[in-house]
Image (cartoon, helix red, strand yellow):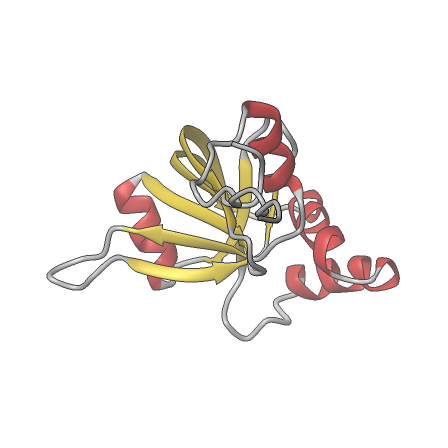
Length: 157
């Protein structure tokens, strides 16, 4: 009887500290969730973000808008990124908001560099700061990671 292939690992494994921070530092689209008001479910929205290992997560909201108000009221959020291809891999952070104020040019540049062509980043940041985005003025939200939830279905057990 011929040798049968060894079964593939289907159980997820947790990512180590370096792996999870490296994965979060990649330019994924993040998903931010915050407790909602009344009987509505949590507000969950995709967003660009910036992250460097060992530092806080930065996201941009719009001053005075619903997401901004909910974040200010709750003071805590969940933030998740995933690899959209199979095998699945994700990092979710439960965190505390440590800063929520007017976005600086440096805040915008740190986020924009991850998603925009290099020759567009400066003009995008200037456009944002001039009020070019009709959704409102940019506000920077800094999130300290308090708890990490991770899974990698493609790595070794």
